[in-house]
Length: 462
Ligand code: ARG
Image 1: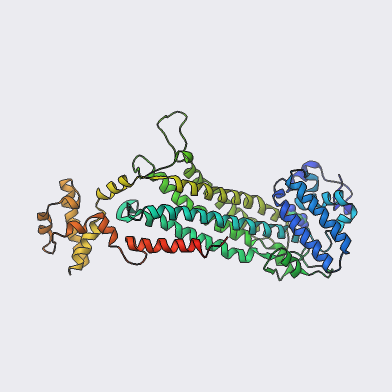
Image 2: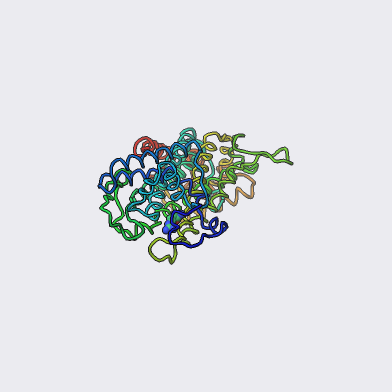
């Protein structure tokens, strides 16, 4: 089979060499974007008088026909034609005859592939933003049910102070909110048209880049042709934003996994998101959470892979850049899939309110409260810390918790203690009183929930 660029060549490469250089195996995922870009390009050529209207119509109809065939799975792609661009051009010529060869006037595969990638990432970024929203919604829905559910809060994975379970869940809402913002911001750089930059230097044809950009819904054009064809920053940014998303998800995965252990028993995963063991009948494994935690690694890998590919590349296009695609496609699939699964896991998990409640009654996480109590009554906090430390020791020696100590122990420790300490030590009071802005006090959590709901309803439009 002859090559579309075969004129200068006296012999053809062997098949296995072609196969090594080809990207059609993966860049066929860009088939719709490539056709969309071509339709805009040829429409622009018609408007600028570079091609006569009837030829433009023929080419557009041909591309439309290819689009339909592709949708039906009737387009065959061959390694001989290397990539999606050449495959489609060949198909177009087969479909409408030699006039199909005019499509590539004033264009190069270099600005063409860059255009495809911009279109692709614009679509996918929007879909991922929707996925983030869906997970945020699931978190908000669960949080709504659990404003007054208490859970131990940890530092160093040691019980620290009790918190509202809603507060814990909403911490992830805000992480995802930043992820959303990062993607939204990246769209400014994704939604820019490289089309018409040519191979690297622009073109002699009187084209109108602003017009083709407008047809494709781009907000602006690249203002330097060399930059237009060699920029892959927008993909690096996407991989970076995706890495952050996966990092956030994997942290919550870790918590879900811990919480569903027999040691914690704070939550139970729904059967639809857990699996059993082939040998141990009692087991219910949080596989999906583990898998998402695991998949985080490959997304980081894709980020590093592309940064490394781009490092030291001279201007403008280099074949190295063909390596930008597989990691990007894989990241899109991984992030979309993970967000989807995650929303389902959060929506369907059972929260063991009683176990959590029991947990906060069986620890010393209300000790800070006691120190604050003394400090409020005028004792320097450092001294109060010491007094309470000693009381904790007394309780440990008696094998009880602070709420179980008789008042005489408190009287011995400081005359500032009054009987109201038993109310102050109640975990519910402990949480409720942390009413500083952004704190876990129930009032604050409700404010935060309301903000989250507003964000989901208003500012996030899709
Ligand atoms: N398949 C190529 C890629 O993905 C398309 C651009 C090829 N350009 C070229 N001058 N060989 O990067």
